[in-house]
Image (tube, rainbow, N blue to C red; front, side):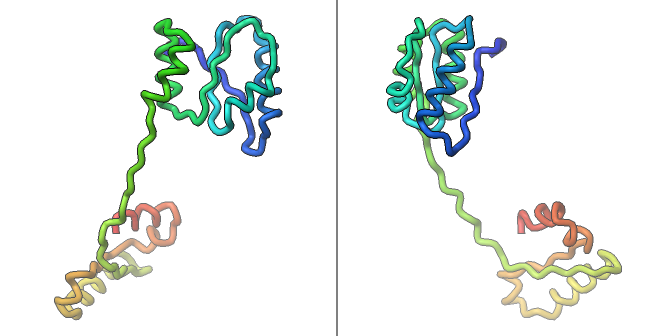
Length: 165
């Protein structure tokens, strides 16, 4: 946004509405330069917080719940262009409709891993022997791959080793 227009108040997941309202009210009381303000709430209902706040701040507060990063960025851009809080609060939910997508696992072949403490060359020889000895009908749904022993032992490397297999 090129300017610092956002502040954050940490609200632990087990915070209740009263505690949230108190933290927000405390924040407003201790910020002398506050103008009309937009409050993004990631979980709780803004109606509950409005009932709890009951404060006389001398400025307008807009509340948007169930926010996403896209909503915050969109609202920030609108604020920097002088769009009113009321327009932002009314329009943000229309522009940031959540969507879902399923990612299904691809049909993967079964995998036989060959490895050897003596090195990758031995693992490749074992791989070759297995491929040559297995019936061709089995190999259509089966992969035989050689891996460095250390890559299988190191948990960080192991994750990447099996990512595509």
